[in-house]
Image (cartoon, rainbow, N blue to C red):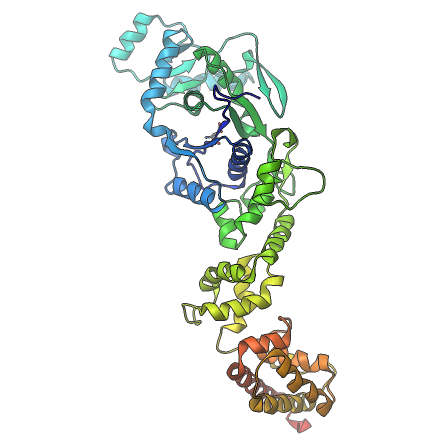
Length: 495
Ligand code: GLU
């Protein structure tokens, strides 16, 4: 295994702040972090912000937020490439001096023309080498005249460049298919290639783990290391992440940025576990891993060659597993901000944490993502419920029987001394005998009266949490609603 002189593993996550971090970026960060932690190495955060035109406001903060949220702490950085421009310019000069790079003064119009001609001849677009042979005197004269120029790499016209990849094996590129890539732009900013190579060398990076799509840049990087006389780090290009339709994961597959997953109420530990399995596996069955287990088990030789498929139902399942495993207190604590955010505006804020905790106990088992909580338990918080009165009439029962049962329960509740699931059951069950309703029927009616819906957490527990005042009022409201409904629709039946 390659490592620097102290045998220390040094890896980096090097995002470009051209957008909010998506699943692919974070998977890259995670693999680098796991590798560093597994080897007791160093994980560095480097912001590759030299593409000034594509810089997105807030992207750096969002990247750091996402890393912090997932617990991917960095040991060095953030290092901003925009703070290190002198280093790259110096490096470009070095290559010019060595005759391995050259100044190019071609205007964009000329380059456009070259491309158009190549396209007519069905040739791949590449620089035609026009400025390769300018004399030093001519270069000096044009620089003095302040003619804009870029620095290009003098890619060998023949031979092959081999990228030795820890995951893919040796990948060979024919130099003739490569370009005289730009290293330094006319504004003095380096391109990705130059800054990336200079920094990886300068930061003594031992392993580069990055998305597969960068492999086409790697032959140039290998040639650059060579040109500088530096030993390249080891390369490991991570498999692509595809959507369920096998197309590259994108917006149309749903949430793609880390912030969106947080907003939707995925737990960071669940996303962490899920992302670790996008391209890495311990075996063909183990799916649930704690952070510590992943740190202990992670190795590059178990990173797959084939693309990983982003399986959203699996993420939902995994999130549910992690939610159920939380101690109740912790679950309630994490649920609180989502409820604060998502419950209807009519519900007074701040919410009562103790009450939220009692509600949480009833819904934890059935929660998959925290953002669905408000809908699941809104009835615990709102003042009035709305539902169609017909929901109240038990299947196979007439309104008269239903109403009689409700009255019996209401009397029982009003006079009930104690208020807990057991005492409530002993008040309600007798009402069945009294009215001939099957327990299932009566419970169904009461569920609608107390929650406004036909599916809800266990009835007596729900009533215990709702409390006497709310329950008595809701049942009285339900009876009134049934009365109005009946007067309106079935007056003649005289019920
Ligand atoms: N700035 C590149 C990116 O956004 C870094 C690629 C690399 O790790 O070399 O992915």
